[in-house]
Amino acid sequence: MTAQTTVAEDGVGSDEGGFTLTSPDGISYRVDITDGVLDPDNPLLARAVEGRRAVAFLGPTVDRLYGERLRRYLAAHLAPGNWHVVRIGGGEDHKTMDAVEEICAAAKAAGLDRRGVMIAVGGGVTCDLVGFAAAIYSRGVRYIKVNTTLVGQVDVGVGVKTGVNALGTKNMLGAYHPAHASINDPALLRSLPDRQIRCGLGEIAKMAIIRDADLFRALEEHPEVFRQPAPEPAWLPAAARGRGLEDYVLRTSMALMMEELRPNLREHDLARLVDFGHTFGPVVETASDYRIAHGESVAIDMAISTELARVLGLIGAEECERIVRLVAALGLPVHDPATCTPELMDRALRASWERRGRRLHLVVPDGIGSAVFVDDLEDVPPAALEEALDALAVRPGPLAVAR
Image (cartoon, rainbow, N blue to C red; front, side, top):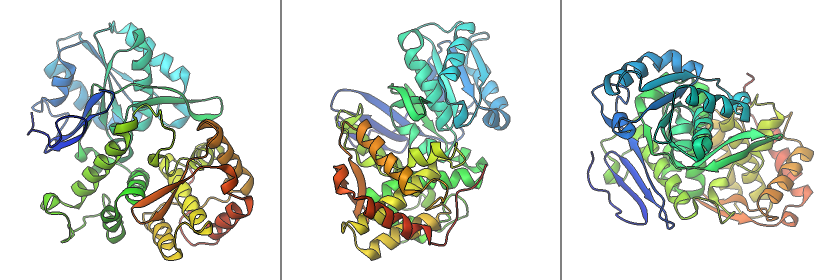
């Protein structure tokens, strides 16, 4: 396997092969980083399956790109008849309870028993769907995530939440169900279209803005990371040198996310810094009928929240400008005229207030690499929200890309 982790007990440990998280309530899981995850000579995925009956699920695009490689891999490592590959729908409009039921039906038809394992090969939608299906199939079976998108590798792939959109609300139904294994292969990112890379950069920028000024600086100096070759900054920490900028950005983002999640995996505390970008964003996303992708909605939310922090006197104008300028430099929208209306954004605030136990817990930056909570609805006057939206409406920059 890999070298001994740097943290042995409660915490997030790191080694050459990835990260191991152990939470205060005893939940423990690992996220691996590997090369050639679907190469038959790479035993990592097979070790996670442990010879159990397995059903792998993947969307149309992933099936086209990697389906045959996945089938060859499973054939090389599992007994004939002991594995199946099932193609499922992709995209947010397929993230429904009907899709979860179809996954469970396919698993049952394949003879998956309670010792079996589901494998999700894909991005956030596929992993959310399969993870939720695994959580409820026979009252819970193992599942493995092979994360093929940047959002998946830095966000969905390092957490324990699963879910579907329902009742007009994003991720309304779901479960906390840690994956038995979660595997990131950076080489899989090379097949991604630019828009999906930009969406992943939105989630990375989120962690940089609220937690890590060095990661922010790396993105600020090299917003083209993951899309064009970028030099390794000379100022990188000694432990990160020699790996390349992409490795630094990926590993730092994963570690930050896991460190934030670790003490509160099941969200007993509803004030969470990782909800930055997820107050206005879900309403922007659903109101656009998913014309605006998740990473783009996070970017718009971060811009609104940052401008709102400036209006409320929580962050200086210069730092506010740096943050909003970075979001735009990554190729992400900071405003969408059709959805960023005072009425809809006020509705988003109230929906978050209700969802978070009648406390707002709005995350806003108070500096580069630092954030605070605005906890009460009355702390966000309608005039302040409108001023923030107006400031973004007149900015040059990319608008959300139409589907």
